[in-house]
Image (cartoon, rainbow over all chains, first blue to last red; front, side, top):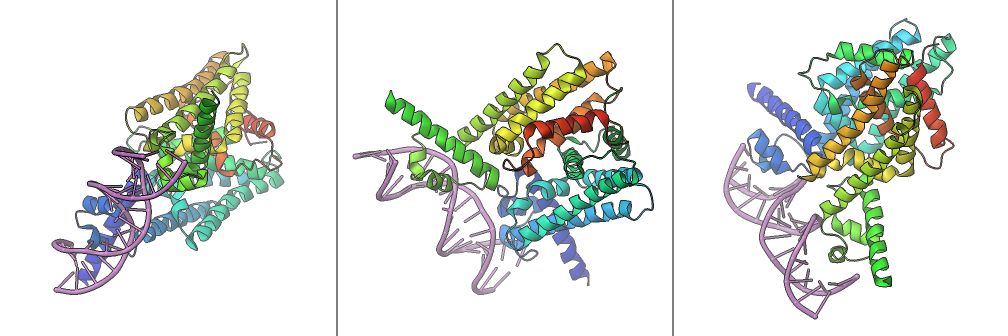
Length: 194
Length: 194
DNA sequence: CCTACCGATCGGTAGG
DNA sequence: CCTACCGATCGGTAGG
């Protein structure tokens, strides 16, 4: 059993390092030898823990997708009005991104190196997530709390703004995820104009 | 002279195709052989027109940066109030992105494969552009047309939303750049709340 | 987890 | 613009 646990933790370690390297150098430009060196073993030894380079990518992307689904479901599960649900969805999304900057970056940019059938399945997950944001906006329009905007365009815009956070967010900075989320919600709900 | 012009146009052709391939497959995953095949020549022949793979990337990124600077300067050159300037900046930015989807995608994502000194210079250009958006927001706050928001966070958010357009914009769709820009400005200035 | 190695492919050059 | 080719590196496997 201790051998089993050790093996799991080594795989987790490989995944963590892969996540960081895929984010920094890109999936295609990260070699298994680079990765092995960072882990502290030989390249060939990686294959005792993983099946292939792509399996690593797939697991990182899929796990991150699960995190986002958990986040949006937290918002959807509440009985609140759409404007409150949207604020929660934004907050939860930001918590995922800021809590997993490397994984989010890979989820957002490196997924395109997936091959079939994972590529199509991944795209479906991504779209489903986006449609859940769109749904909240549509509900808000029905409820009369939101203006009658183009819900698709708005969901794309909001997620785009949220998705770039990994690019400039500094985990050690003074800006905390909750503060960031509050400002984001304010921007989206109230607008810039005085 | 006709030889000179032909040589230029071949280089332009290589650049156009490289732009598309770098966007679709990523810079690192695009081989010079792939590129040469798409152009219709042998890989070795590419080097009669370009110095290196990275030179291609650098030129694509730098040219696109120039397009964005021209865009923002159009807004800054007007004597209008900040809210009007921001709307123009958004419109001009969207015109650049939608008019050059491949180039914009490379500008936004593949620049990180640049090496020094281009990498640092590119980052400086990018930051300078972002600061010009921030400046408009700060002016708007001073003028009293904008709420006293965090101008840095807002400029990052606005550009993030704008920067993801290349990812979902369909040039053959019914959504025209001007319409998109108008909706964007409305979202940012007026907010979602009724 | 390692040594030894595979065939494939990379960016780029020499020489014409 | 081509043929022929370079050294380097790639993801991955065999066998222990």
